[in-house]
Amino acid sequence: MRVAFLALSLCAAPVVAAEGKPSLREVPEVENIIFAAAVANEISENCDGIAARRLKAIGMAWRLRSRANALGYSDAEIKAYVESDAEKARMRAKGERYLAQNGVSYADPQTFCTFGRAEIEKSSAIGALLKAR
Image 1 (tube, rainbow, N blue to C red):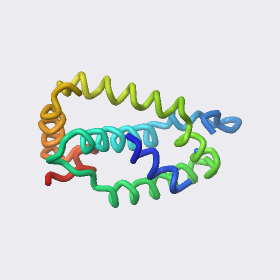
Image 2: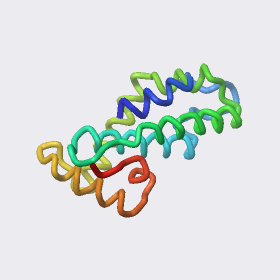
Image 3: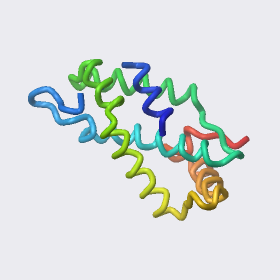
Image 4: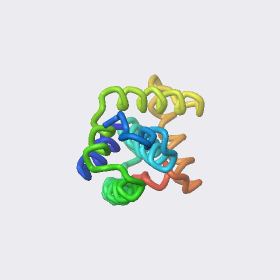
């Protein structure tokens, strides 16, 4: 999950949005992309047979930054959001719940591989950020 946040922070996010705008966590197109990247990274870190598509994630981060800018968010707002410890913890908890709901267990690394390969096969948002080694 660190790579997702790191990639976005390289692009340059406060958790408290400017007047009239929701927090970036409430913008589905931002939240969903960051979530997919975070889960993909977690899979790649826990399954030796799957690697993260880091360049694809960085490209996605640049596009996401541009889209957030187009929605009226400044680079400072984006950076504050991405670097927020509270947001990192929230995203980690959300990702861990999602993985557990899909049969993934930290006690059994093979479950990360099974889930990751299924996501790659489906060409899901998560799977698009992964590659089998």
